[in-house]
Amino acid sequence: MNNHEAMILSARDVRKDYDMPTGTLEILRGVNIDVRSGEMLFVNGKSGSGKSTLLHLLGGLDRPTGGTIFFKGRDMTRMSERDLARVRSNSLGFVFQFYHLLPELTVYENVLLPTLLAKKKDPAWIKEVLKRVKLWNRRTHFPPELSGGEQQRVAIARALANSPDIVLCDEPTGNLDEETAASIMSLLTELNRNEGHSFIIVTHDEELAKTGTRTLRLHEGQLMPPEKIFNS
Ligand SMILES: Nc1ncnc2c1ncn2[C@@H]1O[C@H](COP(=O)(O)OP(=O)(O)O)[C@@H](O)[C@H]1O
Ligand SMILES: [Mg+2]
Figure: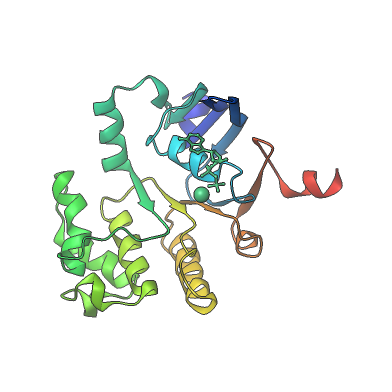
């Protein structure tokens, strides 16, 4: 087994440029990251620092301008769209700021859907994940009947439905009030500590970013541990 295979995700010298009429914008300038199974890794940085861009690259939703991203030893940057879609669907989970639930499907159906698409249907597991997010008793409700925090818990259950190797979260509490945000964070922490689910969570919120197993800062297009910034 080589080094990359021991990791879920490894990024090597990842770059993302945008060519604009006014010149080239260098958003990510050589990002290196290794994420192991069982981690709850925070990526913190100012708004506009490239956190969403990085998360999209790690999740195979976008391709880098340069560098390599390995998913369990496989180079994602060289995969076909079809293989990339299979990795996203079978092995990764996504949670976004605005939930993106389907309003005409019930809570249960929203969580079931990815398992149908991946041909992994497992009713016992759907029940288990809905219990883990404490929404089993709301399974016949529709998203518009739920609060923001409850909708985000559905989105978390949906992200776990295919038993992904890792869940990628982009500002998962960004649309919630402080108290609800705290309850979502403690749910994610509990899912990590008690159930062993792995997460990368990007947030501009410095306080939030202190709760994980590790926090990296995105600073001028590169990732670094926070102490390097504070000591510089
Ligand atoms: N498609 C694009 N074309 C040009 N610039 C982009 C594009 N997508 C993102 N950017 C720029 O990249 C920078 C980082 O964006 P983003 O990753 O969304 O930051 P964050 O999530 O940290 O707030 C921003 O300056 C943004 O304007
Ligand atoms: Mg963002």
